[in-house]
Image (tube, rainbow, N blue to C red):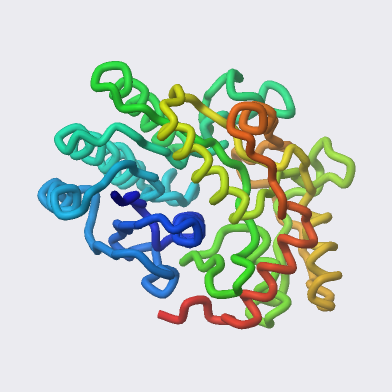
Length: 328
């Protein structure tokens, strides 16, 4: 039997596919390659198509012996979601509805869902726990929360068991150096900082240095992408054992400021990496740090690679080898 990974040619999806393959799993990847990259798929069977195509979805389930789904496929740019909310409701909520219906028709009842810390919005406390208030500050987070709720109701009504994994800031690259992070456009801090070291940007923009933090810049919880991949596999194994559905934060439980990330990147790359302060961006909380205690206690998950320097070093190794990303 096979594991279906939607969005398996994307950043976190491709690392999870690689981890599944390393464990000897049979993997089917569903991706429309709009944001993903064919070169990021290290094995398995790639089915190119869209979650909005119901007939295509039914063929994938009919032609492959699917026993569980890991669902990454989604539009994920916060800024774009605030300019084009319809795209995000159509792709994210509509695509997930189609997937759930296809699973129901095929009799597949295990789903690991890639959610996000964006469902919380401005946190009421730090570190953030799973039971905390969910009031997204942008359309992207709102659609992910809607997807979570829809999945929960499909669980209650149709018996689909699920694990919703809310993760914080993914970083780093696979230890083999074969796959890494290549978004178009790039919006994540670490690859943007490394683009300066590669000579592709003149400087890194720091959006606000007047927050109520030690150095005035925003603090985020960074988690190595391969640690995230491990958590998805543990979540799938939990469902295979008959475990109950649940919602889990995935983070290192420690935050780093923008200036701390830049300083670590300067050490790793040996490049001065000039920085310029810009006005704050609307909707950026000062501090976002997870409590990963529930995932550690119930799934046996422990981040092993999420030291800041180690994450940046692995990302730097990939970006040095692939200065133009996957190059399509």
